[in-house]
Image (cartoon, rainbow, N blue to C red; front, top):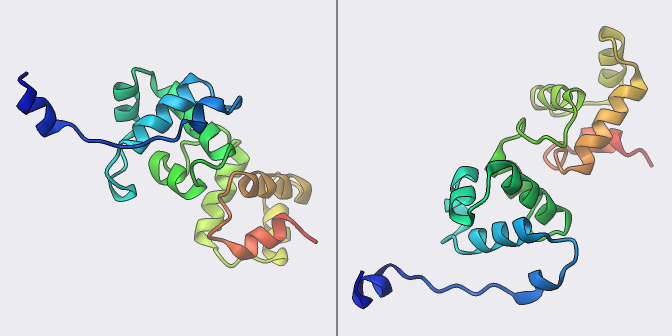
Amino acid sequence: MTGGQASEHARSFLVSNDIFHQPELDIYSQMTYIVLKSCSSEAHLPEVSDIARLGRMNVKQVLRGLQTLVEVKLLTNKIYRQMIGDFQDDRLSWAAKGLLAFCKENPNGNIDELLELSSESGEDEHSIRRALKELGQYGYLEEYPEWSKIASPV
């Protein structure tokens, strides 16, 4: 490749060197961050497989890197979910994933629906609340304020 061709395809971007001084970030989180920062915009996020290819990682390493970036608040839950899909998050239990599907169908849930749900399933109210807390912990209830209130009673 000639010098003209290289500069034609080159793109400059800045990455804060703070990522190299955060002990929570391993090399996979750092590389995932660097690949994401090289994207042109949030509207054109790369696929997880593309991040893996560009960062010379496997998909599992990218997923863990993305999760760590969410934990340290360098990536929003919303962007993370947009990239991997709601039901591909391996941090969620099957119970939480099932409850998320229910929340999507019933976005304005209330305590009565929660109690009815527990009486119609093999799960007790405590188990359902635990799954709701799990969804809240990982940012899945941001679009469901009524379910979020039930998940974290005052």
